[in-house]
Amino acid sequence: MHTLSGKRSLIALTLLGLSGVAQAHTSGLPHIDFATGLAHPFGGLDHLLAMVAVGLWAAQRGGRALWLVPMTFVLTMAVGGLLGFLGVTLPGVELGIAGSVLILGLLVALASRLSLAASMGLVGLFALFHGYAHGAEMAAESSALWYSLGFLLATATLHISGIGIALATRQNLLRVSGAAIAASGVLLLAA
Image: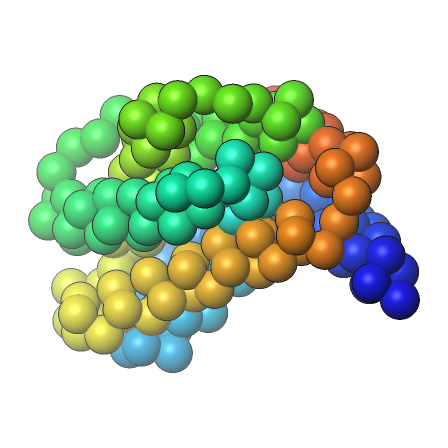
């Protein structure tokens, strides 16, 4: 039963990865509360896949990376969100987000064993772009604190989901999942 559950998780993640290109940017709708922030990362394939991939990769790495890699993403994403909300210019945000899906998918597909510091630095870089996108789209009348807490909690939940999927899935199936995520990254970059 354990393997069947893992296979279902893998199938669901693979289908998400191949379902088409969507982005978690809500076309100028105001972001004003915790619930909107909580829902935002689930609204687009780019954010969803990158955040789940962080969890998948952290679980593959194991040890301290299991919690340090996702924690780095969440904390650095908060910094990126603040930069976006304050209107600080960050070039290449969409490219950084799409590239993160590709690269994180490849890291999972290859079961990459970068050093812990390099792993944290890489996810931190990607988190800046993801956080910036969330913060830049926040309406001026928003409750920045509550909206941010919502998208940070959603991000942590997606990381935990990725960790759970990785722990319930065989390594070879997990690598296929990473390849599907990377393929989605290619599609996002081409869009």
